[in-house]
Amino acid sequence: MITGAEAIVRSLELEGVEVIFGYPGATVCPLYDKLSKSTKIKHILVRHEQHAGHEASGYARIKKRPGVCITTSGPGATNLITALGTAYMDSIPLVAITGQVSSDLLGRDVFQEADMTGASEPFTKYSYLVKNAADLPRIIKEAFHIASTGRPGPVLIDIPVNVQNHKFDFYYPDEVELRGYKPTIKGHAGQIKRVMKAINHAERPLICVGGGIFAAGGQEVFRQFIETLNIPVVSTMMGIGAVPTAHPLYMGMLGMHGKSIANQAISDSDLLIIIGARVSDRAVLLPAAVGKSTKIVHIDIDPAEIGKNLSTFIPVVGDAKEVLNQILDAEPSRKADEWTDMLKQKKSKLVLDYDPRSYGINPKAFVNMLSKKLPDDNIYCADVGQNQIWSAANCDVREGRFLTSGGMGTMGYSIPAAIGAKTAAPDKTVVAVCGDGSFQMQMMELGTICQHNVDIKIVVMKNQKLGLVCEIQKTAYKNNITAVDLCGSPDVTAIAGAYGIPAKSISSMEEAERAIEEMLNHKGTFLLECIVDEKESSV
Image (spheres, rainbow, N blue to C red):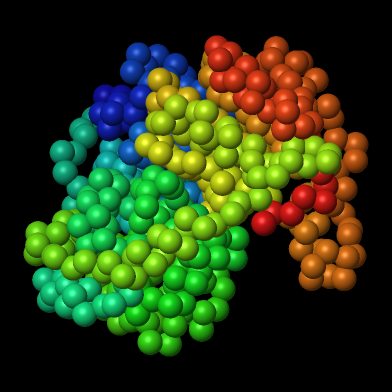
C-alpha cells in the first residue's frame, strides 16, 4: 500500500512527466515530501503561483504535451486562476494540481480554504475535487487525456491534504473510458466534398489560420495544403508562424492591429477558409467587415467555436491536421493564380516604418532586426501591450515559434513562458520581449532563472508608460491621460544586476545591432533595455 501523495508522484511518472513548476505550502507538503524522492521528475520553484501556470504553458506549447504545475490551497490556488484562464483561452494543455484543506473541514471557511473547482470552472476544461485517495490514479490518467485531446486546455485536480496521506493499493489504469467525451477527429466525408466544391468554384479564396494548427501539430501539412492549392493566407495573432512570415503566400496578421493587405483580402475574398481560429473581435471587429458575398468554411475541433463570431457556410468539425490531409487526399488541383498574384504584388509594395527616430530606438525596426539575427528555430515570447503589437507585426518567423497570450491578453506572460519554453527545448534560443510595465509584473522570476540556470534573453521596451492604454486614452478619451505614468519604476538594469544577470541599456538604433549581438553571444541570461519614445505608437 502507498499514500495518496506517493500515488500522485508515481502516476505523474507513468504519464512521462519530467518537469513540474510549483510553489509549495502546507496543504501540498505530503506531495512535496514524496516528489523530492523522485528521480524522474525535476521541480522548478517559481516566485509566484501565477507564473507556475505560465511556465507550464510555455513548456506545453513547445513540448507538445501537457505542462504540470502545483500550488498550495487558498491564495496559492487562487493566484493560479489567471494562468488557467490564459491557457484556457489559448487552448494550451495543462494539468494543475492544487492543495486543499482536509476534506472533513470543507465548507467551514477554515484557514486557506477556497472553492477551487467552483472558482476555476469558467477557466478549465474540467476539474476534480478528490475525495478518495484510491481515485487518484484514475483521475490523473483522465486529466492528462482530457487536457491533451480534442481542443486542448487546462484541467484542475484539487486534492485535500488528508487524501494525500491516505493509504491504498496502487493500480494505474491502462486506458481512459469517459462516457460522453469522444472528440471528433476526422471531418465528415460529405462536408469535405462540399469544401472541395467550394474551393474549385472560388475565384478569390483566402485562408485564415489560428493557433489550432499548432495544437494539431499540423504546420507541415498546412504548408503543403496552401502551396498545393496556391491560396493566400492570413493569420490571427495565435496563428503567426504557421508558415514562415516571409512565405510568398502569407499576407500577414489580420485584425485591428494587423496588416492592411490582410484585412482588405478578408473583405474582398469570395471564400474564406478558417482553420483553428475563433476569429474574435481582435481579428474581425465587425462581422460586416467580411464581404457580403463571402462564403465561410470553418474547420475546428471544437464545434462550439464554429459560427460563434461569423456565420458559417460549411462547418467542418475535426482535427485541423486530419481534415487538411483529407482534403489533400482528394487530390485538389485548384490554382487561383490571378487573385494570388495580385495579393503578392500588393505585399511586395508594402513599406514598413523602419525610419530612425530623433529620440530612442524604433521598436518596429528593432524587433525585425532582433528576429532576423536569431537562429531560424528560435522561440520568441511576446508579452502584452505595444510590445506585442510591434512584435506580431514585425517579427520574422522562419522555423521557430511565436508565443504570446492571445485570447486573455495577460501581461506578465513572456518571461515565465520563456522559462517554460527553454526548459522544454534547452538547445533552442529563447527570447522574451516585454514592456517596462509588464516587466514589473514578472521580474521576480529572475530568481527562478538564476536558481535553475535557465538561459533566456530578455528585452524590455521602456517608455515609462503603460503605452497601449495611453494610446487608447489619446485617441478615444480626448487625450485624458490618466493612471499610466510609470514614474517611480526601478532601474531595470540594476534589478538584473542584483540577480547577477548582465544587462545593457540602449537608446538609439546605432547601438542596436551591436547590443543584440552581445546579448545573443552571451552564454546565460542577458537583459537588454531599449529606450522608446513615449509618443511611439503601436502601428
